[in-house]
Structure formats: structure tokens, C-alpha cells
Amino acid sequence: MTGGPSSPRFVDRFGPVSDGYARWRPAYPDTWLAELAALCAGRERAWDVATGSGQAAVALAAHFREVIATDASAAQLASAAPHPRVEYRIEPAEASTLRPGSVDLVTVAQALHWLDAARFYAEVRRVAAPGGVLAVWCYGRPEADGAELSARLREFHDVELGPWWPEERRAVLDAYRSLPFPFPELRVGRHAITVRWSLDQLLGYLGTWSSLSALRDAGGEDPLPALEAALLAAWGGDRAERREVRWPLAARVGRVPG
Image 1: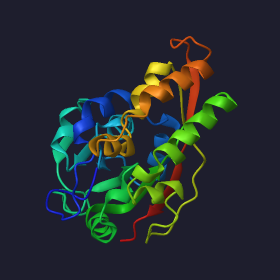
Image 2: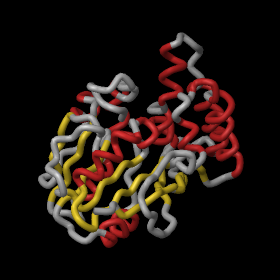
Image 3: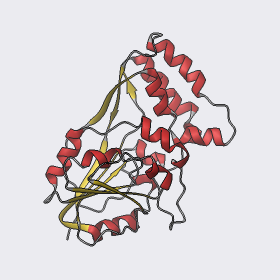
Image 4: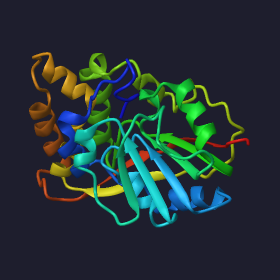
């Protein structure tokens, strides 16, 4: 989920939690991926960059003949979901083995802020087919049905874990508007990830946050047990009850000239 083994910026932040990442990270809505596919001149090949455990890559396979899914983290790819039309490769985003002009759609889900943007954009220009599209998107803290639940999640994200978020996280909170995007932008609809989860599913997802890993690695007191108790009370005491959890997507989509 970062620049790559050849990059001095590479830090495998998510390798240690790759199993949890594969299990608990939510899938992207098919309506969003279908809209992106419809913007492309061809449906031959998509490249999912910094794929992690393959959530976006597997969903893209419904719309493209082939999906190449790359990540610099071998641990992440070891936990990725297999699919007959998805090929996983351990490669940095900035230096892929894709052929020039061979990709109809390039996607970066929840990972652009980890990349060397200038080198990555040069790679996008190299591999994009005529009429090719680049789509990058992210999502911030979750919203839950119920003011008390949402407020507690906001406090956990912003206050308790606030000092432990990496600097790159700021780009997610401002919906990627602070990051360079040197391509003519296309208008797209608004989409959100929406799931109905039990409390344990939500806690599993929260356990994949990089800020929580950083706090634990530094020897700080783990705040998740106290949060679990507070959320259980707000949940109504039944941890198996399913509640709606939602993440609005923030996206930038552009046509790659050439």
C-alpha cells in the first residue's frame, strides 16, 4: 500500500495486519465500478494499483476481461482473494511490468496518499491505452446509524487516535483535493460503501487502522477494549444485531491524454 520495495518511501504498514485487512475491509459498490467501466473506451484490461487484499480488483473483474492487481506488500497479496480473471503481482506502483498502452482503466482505492505521485502519474501515462481512465478514491471515518454511535466513532478517530495517524492521512480527510491530479477530470456520481454489520465486524475493521497499529507498536495502552464497551452500550447490548455502517467515497477521475 506504499511506493514499493525500490522506493525509499516504502513502509509496509499493512503487512502485519494483512489477514484482518482481507477479512474486515469493506467491498466497493458495484454501481461505482460499473460507472468507471462505462467511461472507458475499452474493457480489455484494468490495473488496480496498491490492491491490498484485492477488494477493488475482484469487483473490477466483473467489468473487464483481465485485471492486473499490484502491491508492494507480499504479505498483503498473500491474503488477497483469488479470482480467475485477476492476476496479482508484487510490484511498486511507480514501476510496473505492464506493457505500454495496454490498460483501459487504472484504479487506486484508498492508497494514492501512500504513492510517489509524480513517478506514479508518469507510469499511468506510459501504460494507459487510448481513451484510458485513471480513477482514485478514498473514504474516511465510518458513519453508523445512530447519533451516539457516530459521535463515539468520531471521537475515537479524531481524538484518541488523532496523534497516531500518519501525515499522509490528511489527504484522505480532505478528499484528495490537496493531492496533485494532472489529468482532465470527468464528472462522476456520488457513491458510498454501505454494509449491515454486527459489532464484532465493526471492531474487526477498526483493528486494521494504521493509527491503532502505530499506537500499539509504541507501547501505548490499547484503546479498543474501552471503545468496545462504549459501542456495545450504544449498540443496545446485542453485539450480534446488525446496524448500518456507511463510508461516503471521495473520488477524482480523469482521462489520460495520449
